[in-house]
View 1 (cartoon, rainbow, N blue to C red):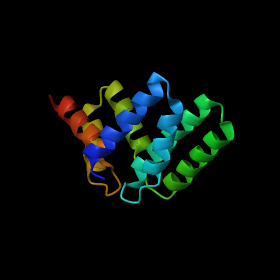
View 2: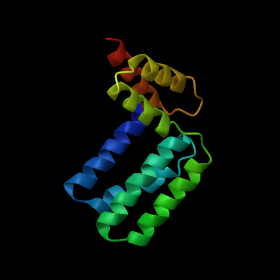
View 3: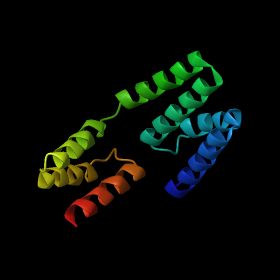
View 4: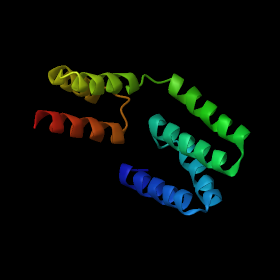
Length: 129
C-alpha cells in the first residue's frame, strides 16, 4: 500500500470513528495493522487507533491487547520519538541549529516511515526559513 492510499484509508476510518460508527472504523484498523506491505511504524499507528476504538466501545481487554501488540512491534525497532522530542525541546531553548541537525539525522535512518520523513522535512524547512 502506498503512502497516499494509507493516508486515505486512515482518514476514512478516522472519519467513521469521529462520526459515530466506531464499530466500522474498528473493523478497518486490524486489516491495516496486519498488512505486511506497510512499514512497522504505520502498523503500530493503526494498532493505536484500534485501541482507541476498542476503548470507546468499552472493550478494554481488546484495547490493551492492541496496545501490547504495538509495543511488541515497536520494541523491535529503533524509533525516533525521543530524538524528535529533543529537537522540539532544543527549538524551545533557542538552539535551532542543533534541532535541525537532529531532524537531518533522522532523515538518514532506514526505519523512518513516510509520514515521519515528511514531518522532519517540513520542520527543517520551517526552522531554516
